[in-house]
Length: 443
Image (cartoon, helix red, strand yellow):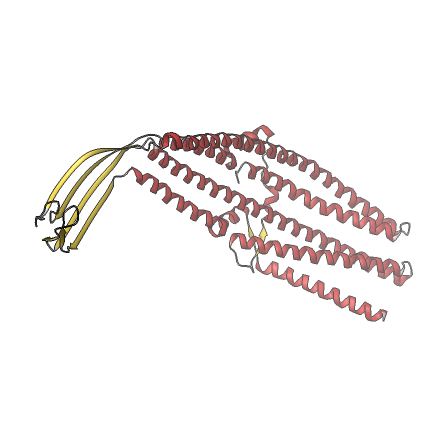
């Protein structure tokens, strides 16, 4: 029973290792090295979220053009032909009914041109609002572009981290296999215990399992990244090793705060929203002001039915003039609309100050994390150095028979943990730098 179980366990791990090897071969066969900028360019072309915002910008452009068209004159034309029935004429008490001749066919043609010359600032405000909303949509598009780029950056660096983790695991698997083979040789010589071999076999199996999990995680991340940038699912994105040598601009917090103040899109949107609400006050006030317009009209109609009996002729006349329109009810109805617009302006001002506060806090935290990353990296480099030296010493002591197998396992685990943390520290440093660039929207 025990042998059957061991045989099944061996077959299981052979399957896992085989699958991992197959996946690794697939990565090597189809993997292609991409820089971050190349991924950004692909996302600009293929990312569906960016496409949606590009379409929204096109709609906003048309809305702005539609608002500008209100400055153009209105031209109305009317053309009709009619068949006229018999007319009836009666006294005021509906007595003495008699038929009146009306020409059977009628026609009517009219052309009217009008131009608003003053609308209390409504047309100007509407046009400005159209341009501001167009600008807001453009800022939305740029902000979404930054968000997509930061998402891609995170996935790109995570894949790099996982690939580096795989390298560390593979090195430790090779080292464990060598130690295991050495133990088997010593076991044959009678200088090692079977229990020591079993423990290291378990250690090897756990490393293989961890390796398989990391490869699965890498596969998931790669699928998500390919989806975001529009690549085929079968393509494996290999990060460019030059990313580890990214030029990190080690600037003080004041630099990043000033950069965020001028470049952060959220702040720009909050400031624009404040300007929009201010323009809405002018638009609300325009309702309480008179509207003036010029007009010119030409009309051709027949027959002339204002006479009795009607005259079977065409009558053409034209006129030009100026018109004024004033809504008297706005004097007592529009006060609430104006006050509402003012409250919205005050609210927009508070939201702008809140946005500044959030950006300030975010930059401070990101800059602190960025500085901490340098300390963490130096610490982990020292930890790897010490863990490697400790493993070498313990391994020599074990070979000399003055250390236990548990000491070897502890030293191996400490070394593995230190190497994995060093990988994380290197990537975290770069990630925190790109986080600062994202918060300042300079990706």
